[in-house]
Image 1 (cartoon, one colour):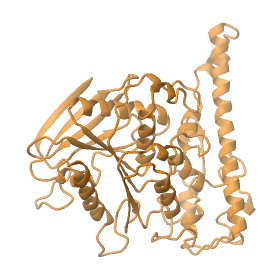
Image 2: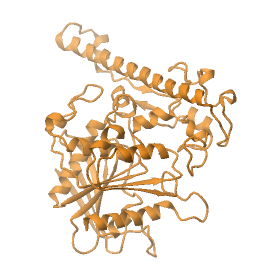
Image 3: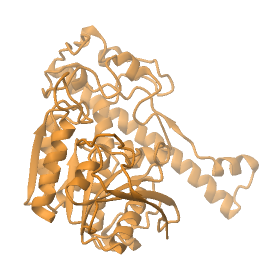
Image 4: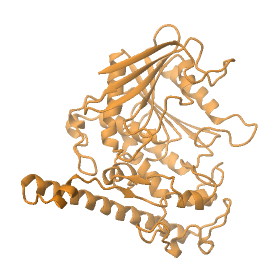
Length: 419
């Protein structure tokens, strides 16, 4: 089901008195659509159309938890002569319950809508965390229903085996990190001594202790033995959180079964059966590469996506995976359990693929991008390295933002393969 609103020629949020490369081209129009997914949820999207004859090619932009209707590459897509589809997932602005397998229902609803509109070439553009979602869709949509994931890592039925998942004809990955779980595996702080105490520290694993090699302003220098212990401890902490999440799920499921069968219908048991616990995961901004710029060197500045002060970003309230259900943790943020890791999904990408790396990215590092590119199975794949930060902004004053060049390269790639 689709509910639509339409507008005539507009600049859809890119208004300016003088057209420039960041505006939608003159005469472009938009359609705003509300869709119903196969599992009954609502999702919405905006379809940007160039002036004149409707194109056969549409480029889709989506993130599992971010709003993408004003994505900076949409003007370049439309200027290239393609339609652009920006879709919002059911978890936009809130990943508390985000499970990637369930989010595929949202993607599929958008793909079915576009197929019904007559588009013969659908290209998925995954930016940052959108790369993990769209790569998982590419993997699962390429499989027969019986071979798709039938359960989420938390045990919930996915419904993917019966889901209509239209295929896609191209892939674009822009500033892709290796998956939200893989990203967190590298930036979670393993020096947390007690999960219930956000300030607890194991000194010999503390990334901000000068005795372990820390120096401010990107001058840290960590010894190889510390890095090895740190990485092992990160995996150990994620494993502990996985066990905690699975224990929470098992306890709730046991209570539900006892209430359902009548084995225990006490008020306390009913409360436990109805309750959905939430994990609070503190200190998730401690990637050593953000502090020691000699590790996997690039054009990046000191600090992370969350700021230059590692104390504020690591100990503060804002950060990856801060609050999530145990099911969301296992599906999205666990580097051990999540299916949405490009190391697992990239080998299923056989469509023509463009990979754009920003050389000053503070979340997508050179070694990660090389691994992603190597894993992609497509024979027709192109890897471009462009100066810019994670969002394609300029690294220095007076320098052209990397997103401008990325837009030009994307337009040329689309025109060479689909127009």
